[in-house]
Length: 595
Image (cartoon, rainbow, N blue to C red; front, side, top):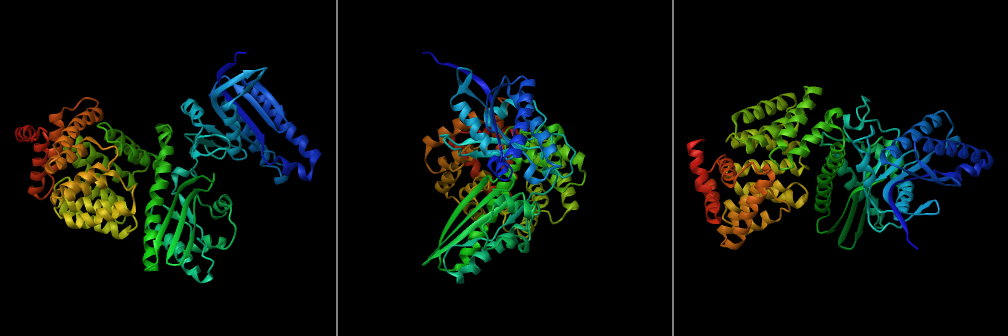
């Protein structure tokens, strides 16, 4: 017998806490639940959906489009939330809804298969009163519905073989374009560090787990982009079994850090994880194992690693969300995050898009330090691709404006340092970055920026120390940190180490392929150098969409190297280019004719 299959939008809903509701008042609760489900099914039918199964406290339906399913579901949940607001807790009926776009088997008026199973699992993963969508469903509706979804990351769902990317919405999340001043993106994210559990079985080690917690709170407090819940508040949960979502609500925290410390013999193991409080989703987790030769050195190292990772992970999570939101309605902070993302895209038109985002942020908030710092950085990236003096002048103007607005903002100091470095004033950039590191010693970004200023200034051993520390403590600090660490090795004639470091960059931009080719050539590996030159040419075309030739790309890279204070450094890099077979001499001649 042949099987009929089709692609459809599957809707699955279930009443949250049905057993709890009926436990106290079985007959009354059942009537309230049935009234709600009758309303749900009527709304589905009115919207063009088809109810296939209505059993107990669950509803299975299909829709002809994802947009219809999502809009209907949002209307259902909004109506239920408004109705529940005036009721006592034990009188409220809330439902969870899961929506999936999937392939199903159609038989005897019902649908079966993986597409249905996934919708049911998404329903179970949804918040009471909320929606949970598969990635396929989200991509079909995100441009067509005025709802702002939360990226729930990848989740392991029961009886589903692979991790599933999920997206969430609830009536508490405002529509895109809402002018709600409490919107998450208009304020700093808040984070609470719960007391780390002492798992050693020795009460005498309590000082160590408490010390880890307190130091993390202190160091995170240095990050002015975070609102850190005070120790006295978070320690009310010490010694208690904690529901992270409840802790987040109690402490008004967007994110929660929890962990444990286990000391055994001469070894200590510290685990830590970052959790989104509203959803319970785990965003980051790590385990640290150390010998206990110096317990306080272990504490310092663990705290440094945790504090380095958390702000970066939070910002990436929020930046990922902002990319899926209509840019016309983004508030200031999301525009800043969007600008940062474009800067890291390494394409010729990316700085222009970043400039647009930062300019809109400034239009919304003319005195926003981060927006001016970001626009300065975007202008510097534009100058790298198209060396017009106007870009550099704008970069310096906005960077100086950012510093004038807040002399203790590391991002402002970093933007001005970068502008000065690209103006051949790296000696003036170094004290700015030293101040940024003093303000934010736990941030490896600022330490890397100090290293970059030192590389440009020809102080390679000092630069190497900062860059190696940044890479050791934060593997995700940025490929550009490896880029400049590779340069320190190259300029000190450690060509094999330089090549290996450049090779650690998984998806390098074209100019890094040029450095890598030069390092291989200087190390005598001509075969690898030739392959990298071919890759340089290919990447250059991709980044510029075919608008930049190999010779023009070489002019860009040679000119950028001219900002390094020590002329021997640029001469050594040019020699590497030459040995690799890159047209460096033609580029130098063209720059002499048209500087």
